[in-house]
Amino acid sequence: MADTERRRGGCHCGAVRYTVEIDRRVPVVSCNCSMCGRSGTLLSFVPASRFSLERGEGATTDYLFNRHHIHHLFCRTCGIKSFARGAGQDGQEMVAINVRCLDGFEPDQFQVKHFDGRSR
Image 1 (cartoon, helix red, strand yellow):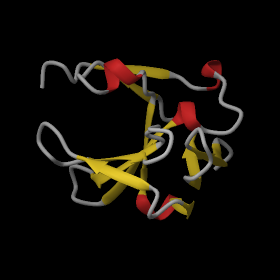
Image 2 (cartoon, rainbow, N blue to C red):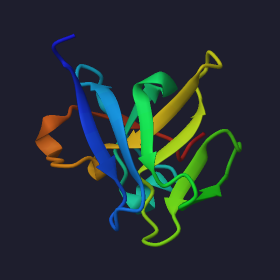
Image 3 (cartoon, rainbow, N blue to C red):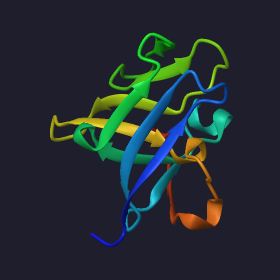
C-alpha cells in the first residue's frame, strides 16, 4: 500500500522504542475522554502484528481505567504514554499508537477524526 509507512517512535527519554506500520489513509483519533483530553494524544489503532517493541518491555507501567479494556503503558522514567495495548471490537489484538510520539511527527501529516469518549 502506498499510504502505509514504517515509522519509529517512543517515549521522551528513549527507554521505550518501537517500530510501527501505519496506514496514512486512516484518520488518527482525537478523543476527549478524561485521559486523552488531558494528555492531548492523537491515536492510530493498528493490528498488533504491525507493531514491534524494540526496547522498553520492563520500562513501562500499566494503567487501566473506565472499562479496563485498554492497557495504557507509561514509561517509568519520563511518564510518556507512547502506545497502549488492547483488543478491537472483533477481539483481535491491537495497539493504539500516540502519533505525537513518532519520530519526526508533524500534525499536518495526519487527518484527524474527533471521538466523544467523554460521553461513553
